[in-house]
Length: 315
Image (cartoon, rainbow, N blue to C red; front, top):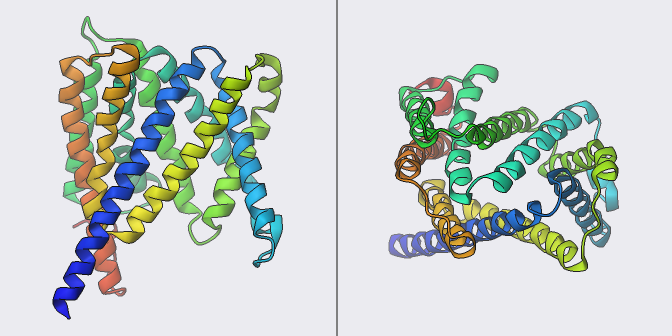
């Protein structure tokens, strides 16, 4: 019986790894092709249209599943419009910062610096959610910060102020994630995703009209395809974390750096500088520490619900 359980666990881990790699690959492809779009269209237009396309898909999904309670669009009902709109506003800022990063910088540079986001989340959890962060996670925060400094080289002749864009995007992304965490148990994931997208669409509607540039059928179809890719990627990644342990699949999230490096080299002939690779080593290492400690916290909580998770004990 134990052997059968071990074999099942191994199969689940293999499946989880495959799903994680597939999901990250789809996100990398989405980012790569988005770089083509922002070269010809205003980032605000891409942000707004992506949001409205996402809303359209979610409404269609709710109508197709109207026979299952709660019926139809009532699944999105909420009494927390203010909180959703705040997240949406931060989402607009994050989207613009990230798209301008893609427009003006190399793909790998943007990806490496944006990997700083999970580390910022750890810092913000301690500051804004009053969670106790243990020594290992504080070490990860410091290590990640060192990695960012190495990657962007502030104060050197090679420093490019444009690196502030993906760095700011990682910070606003982490801020939005912390706000989502505060809504845990209050709103469902479906409600949060729908109202965030709807809020982004509403907040960018006037700028969309002002800065609108006609899109070719090919580009519009590409944008729809990228939205579908993003949705599929999130499904794969979610199924990955449900199927296998986060300690097993978490590290494979960083395969995105490989895919992005290949896409950047193939389509734009991008070759990252050495400082980017060295900075990536520190940032990814710090991110792995954070992921591992989070996974251990979840496992301890699952085995003994009476024990607080590590992020609350400081161990």
